[in-house]
Image 1 (cartoon, helix red, strand yellow):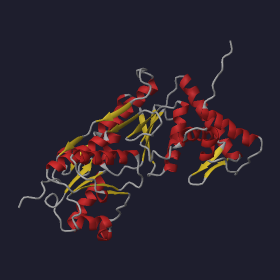
Image 2: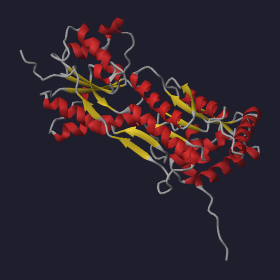
Image 3: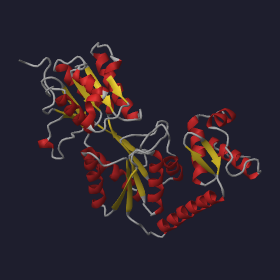
Image 4: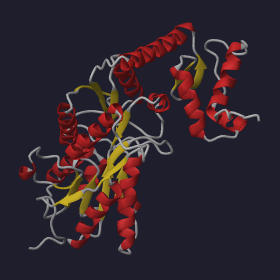
Length: 386
């Protein structure tokens, strides 16, 4: 009886590219077929092609240049691929002999607010309890730096990674590479659409619903939602969806002008020239929901510069408390995402994968934390009592 082993689609694409290179049809520096061409040729989805390209890039066969395409690598890059495989083999051998670095890597965009501080504190607590240590690298919100950070941490022998991804839509090849090689990792705060991984995040839709519901009870009808993220990530979109759904439930019309996204607030020294300042000064909205704590503080400061009082003239609800690491002393009404618990659970899940004591019933763990509304001093009834 004959049995047929089915070749995965992504592997067929890889074999096709390798054949092009090995037959000298393509040489170093030549562009390989585009993702669209490969999708059409093999009748597959984009993620299948991306998976194939990630594997070839990890092997040093191709070099991916953002915005330009993928090219055949030179001998040096192929040598780097060989080196990477050697490192992986050495890592596997170390594990087989029971040798552990007990090092966990953490990749984050930045550490500029209390959200990040509380998150890291939770991670450290879980690692300390199990006798592990950590190494933290910052991506600065740059996808290429995120890739470099992941490579660096793997090269120094990290037994697993906790990654706060920069952007889901670009499908970081290093993250995909970890998935397909079985390297332990957990994503924090966001996930890759269409890619099954372990991740932990707060329920963003519920968070904005809690904010809208509370402001509505206070009498606000002109409620703006603000995000200064340069990327329309899944996290941002989920929160905007929650905002829109909450208004629809109340029979309110959605005002596109109240969805303020994709801008940047630098120094408040020249804030009077910023469109957001004019928006606030002209009282286009009576309440603001900000998708991060720093932006909540900036709107608070702009309101004061415009001669407005918070909460008498306008109300602000931010995601996460930006004003105090000690909860009792915070002044902002905010959506609490339990970031300390998020970090603790993420690290715990990762260590469980590494030590092999997780239940096998569910291959990937998707942990969604339920946020809560914490009422502070930046929200009040509208119109304000006189």
